[in-house]
Length: 410
Image (cartoon, rainbow, N blue to C red; front, side, top):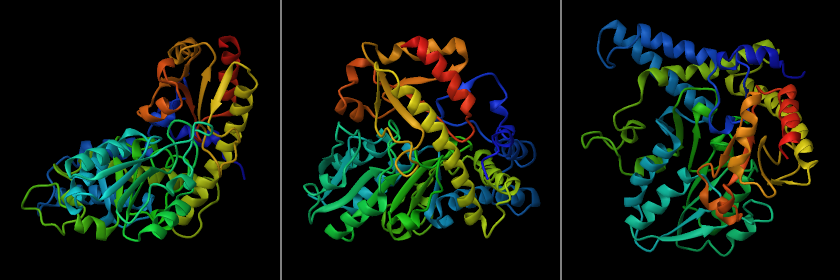
């Protein structure tokens, strides 16, 4: 069965416009079910939590259901799932808690490929606690990380390694289980942190299968409200220092990492993401097993459709001699997602998106909060890259519209 894109698009009010969205890696439009749950909470549940009266209890149930939905998406327990305002804040809060548990001279490895959310917090942690910082560098030829390059970075003092599951600029997928095995072979108790932000809109997350200690996704890029979910292995979260009020006990998970608590109405809206996935499953006859199994089947449909989009877009881009595509040229969904970065010879990246605006095509350029990657690729003086980022609600017709405009631009 192929994905019924008309059905899918009908679930997103934000798609009922003439714009073709090619900037989804920065944030997807929310599903109608998310909007409905958020609106319902604001209209009928906007009271304080934790009271004995029925309305408060109903409000709390909606918020807790949203937190459970976030945990379900990660494949984690609710005690191990921190709903946060953003991945940057979530990782930053976690880093502030982990730092005091490390010792001066311990070593931390970060990459120059990742989004700054999974670099800056660990760099600051290292500086604050006298840790040694090492950098896992991308190879410019592939615009990707290579596991072999870890050999010279890991040693008996390595206490934390942070890297991305999917490159947010070029869409290349990393073999996380293999990387985890390499790190564990060096030292079993190394804390392993993976950034799943660019992965989560396209594939089902499964933190247990990955074997990582911490993982994060920006749920506003997974058809939800502007929130993030951070997984932390329970033993890691218990050992880390809480970042909430002093009187919040260290065993109060995940609340000790949620200063100011969650945003109630948006958290209640998170259940709309799983509502949407369930609706797609039902429509496509994928009502099989439990929720995780249903969602796995749905994401497989998403991946197949996205592979077709990616193939059409890559073929069109690579047809032009003036265009250089960064990252994998193969649309294989085991290798990449349909987030494609490119440059145009002799043109600053900032010149390209405005040429698409009159045609109703939303496109962006820049470093996409991965300035280290742009610098390593030698593109910081060229305005970065142009990034076309698709998800399953995009269509082949939209790709063809894009390629027709591109032919005039280059």
